[in-house]
Length: 576
View (cartoon, helix red, strand yellow):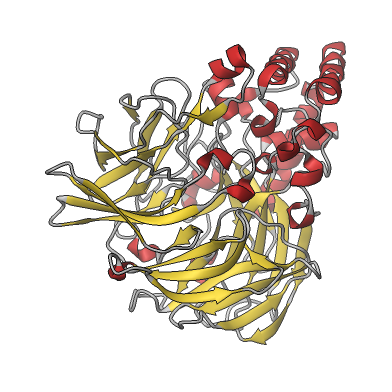
């Protein structure tokens, strides 16, 4: 998850890189995407080398940065952002891994997964132990991609793991200079030190070392597949187009994508794709009005005009949202971005406003403006991630299922203290009545469903058990049809003492149809902390114990990360 703090303060209309991959197929070169991306990378590095020669202003900026880090904002004085604590254990970064064979050590890979690829995104700082404050969210994006063999169509006989950085502008800039250049926005913008870092960043821009038109995000949060393109996402930048080679598993960054100039600034890391219309719905948020801007793309990838939403009370941190058949749903939380608090009070850029009552906004899905936007107060409901939403009673009632963060103030500090309770919120659009029901007594987050039911009524969700967050120590399957009768848990898997995982993902077992909603598999990466080994685990989603049907031993440690996706073989072969 990445809050667009840089964008809030320094955003500028950008002439961003457009991609050959967005052109019609008939107009594209026959050069492979990987070859094109490699050439583009070398060109960008060469251009930047000539564009940013060593200079006295840059040397001064480097010196001031060191002074801030060593004398003003010492990591040891703020343990929650001390890199020696934050980047320890399986949160420590790993090196890139070229395509490397793995071994199936248990069971066999189900046929619906064969030839497909599981991709997990997450933070992985390229500079191993930064000598400055560091939050988990500040790490560079790295994709960990596991390509599974398919005897009928690929030369692979074993799974292949590949771990590669997303080549964002920030990554390339700091890779060339050999050290940090852009500030750590989660950990760095705090009090007097935050103001000093902002001044240094502005000086670097004026000196020509940083070009904000090229973006400043980390692309470390999630990955999505839309219109036959893979995108690495964070909410402080534009999407980065990626390519997975279906023959050998190599992961390549194709470039920063602005959808032909139609998308500016940034986009949420959690867009929603309608499984029926194949449209993609998204938003971005800002510290200035409009705090929220809503937009969507047709199935071909053409963006529809922005819909500014001006009715928010304050610039609330909005990491995720939901869609139904007829509505887009926006959760307003008590987590607020307030630059003036940092300037006037020496506090953090993002803080908690306990006086606010969280609200849920409901907007017609194809609205051209916000005139029909309605807000409903939901006291105590601070949502970070949605699980699903749908309509009932002929559209008169909206149902939202999501983990409710009970201690959201810890999200930017002691994350291990966070607890999340899965709630089902019902909103009656006619009467305005709002009710909430808890589905499980456990602390659960990272809920996923069958992607064929996004925006439609569904029955099952698969959630990670806080281990503590962001680690998860097990998986729980909840049956939403049991709401109101107590604990809705109908399936459980615990990984065992010292073994933890990241977000699960559900893969249906029938490629051409939905069948039974829970007919399929739950997949994730797991890590054994005592041995340092990592695995890819496949669980039977129907079984009460979520039985493990296949396990792949991985050749490299996979750090705990954020969000992932499984791309089926046909989708992988159709990449643009």
